[in-house]
Image (tube, rainbow, N blue to C red; front, side, top):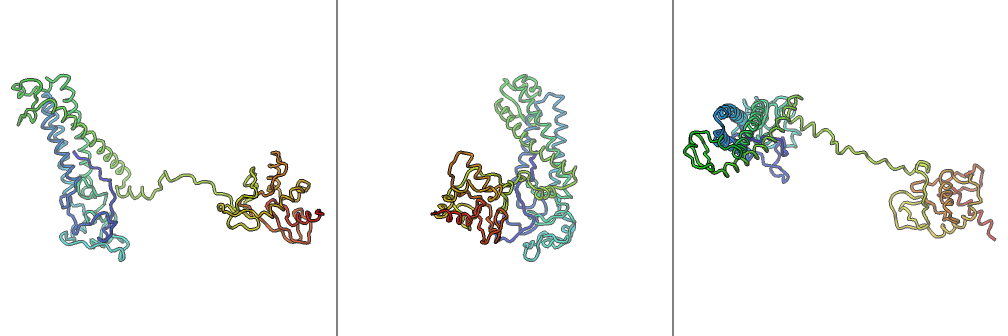
Length: 428
């Protein structure tokens, strides 16, 4: 019984130039006929070793220990399943799954040309394989491991060392099904012998050969053809190893069998399933992106009131111009001291000005929030991050009245030029 998990590992469907350092493997010079063609794969040898181990242990050690009615039933049932698995396994490995045009025209002894991606974008283009140099079916794929086009390609199985296509898919499916059935039947037999060895050993010693054995600590294996004495410890350790390997193989084989039953119900192949999975987005990557930050032209109402003022030592942006601070990181620049001094001087008259001279929702909201906290003379260097500053047209003030000179607007929404004139008018 074999573990036929054939979906592990990455595989290219086209051989490439042999000079690449990132090449996964070097394609064979000639196409492989079937799973018996060299080079043999390690998983293929492991599969046959596991099948041989289960067959020898099952029919040579534990099935002969069953009582007379059950031993005959076990021989017939488990033996038929193991024989079915052997025949289907050999057929799946032996059948050449290549496309009909490849099998009829291709000479397997001749070398296969190396795929040149400068001449062809794909190995198979318009149902013509540039390597096999034949026209193939619509579901044919060129396998880089076998180096030929496979009819109704499903996948390349390392346990069979052969491609699984339309010609040998059902042999492959029967191989998996029979392996699952064999494990389901053999594991209970081994567990029964293991338990009865402690509960009632006489049930397991009904064979005529046990009459010549002295003591309950000695057991016979390979009954009835070639009886061989062994100890109880060896029998129990072998049972434990058999059950452990059987459960591991059964778990993997059931997973593979259920997967192919699902593929049959959907009417798709393993290759088509993998292609769909790769094209579909990953659910883990569907995370909600954070909300976009407001642009520089956003109003203060959309940003919300800023409760913490920025003093005169706040850093300016490297692209700041006319008190404009963009949200592009801090730079070592500082507000000039004369400007801060002038703004502090204007602060004395700020409380007496009408709120109509300030832009609603910006400086007024900031200053009122700060004055409500008990500050008597807060600094006026309130900077709105990301707020562009505008120059009011000539002849217009914030209140709507006419003026003779252009007005430059500060970050607080008041007129610096107007305030400077007012300050100069009050100075003695």
